[in-house]
Image 1 (tube, rainbow, N blue to C red):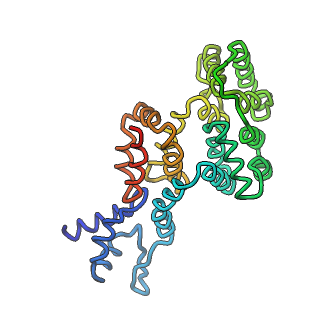
Image 2 (spheres, rainbow, N blue to C red):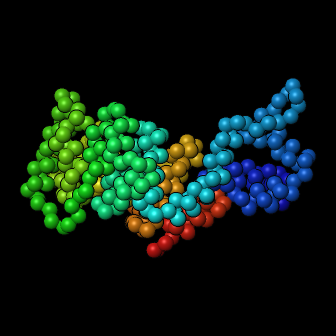
Length: 314
């Protein structure tokens, strides 16, 4: 391989989700000091020239980014090895520390797990942090999201097959009226809406969503302006659509590190649950297969591990 090709290969090895360890080992490892200096001079996004002192130094911002890229594989392996209860408990704790940009993770855990799985995560949270998820959500979240999120993480939903259609129709009307009157009474303060979303079974809520569309002519999530309520409805009624959208956002090159981390979280937490359905939905939404998109975007051992997980079960 010519030196210019090697330069391009190394630049690509650093540019994505994870790093291409093989290229770094086989190319960067054999370069002599002159070749490494040439690389530093030709990759200005990574290195900054100190003209007074005549040397090239790493761009601090890129060093911080690379630290995250190098640990993606390790983090994925550690998360995959964890008991699902511990994994969800730790993900919830991290989401609370990061603040509003990560509150969707709390909604994922509360709304896409079974009642027993959510209860297990709450038990693990007690064991790990000597607090309950409920009390930490209530004490850390001070804004308009608190009431909904406390209700969601406290839920233990019925998971049988019985749905009372008349009740579902009535509650669809309740939601329709609440959305229409949002200017008078914000939906985030509507106890009836929160009760419906945080206590009803998922099958019941799917029936509510169906009746809502009959009443309004639009999908429930389309009419909801509040992001947390929109995410809640998606996670409860169309989780594969929700996860496909999260994955697509995480696979964009120019997104921040927290959005990129969603790729690891979704693949790890859904690999044994509904990844086959998520792959089907992703193909339908974006016209490309999820494995192909990961192959195109991710790098090295991280990429290989993700592809192994998403091909489990077909």
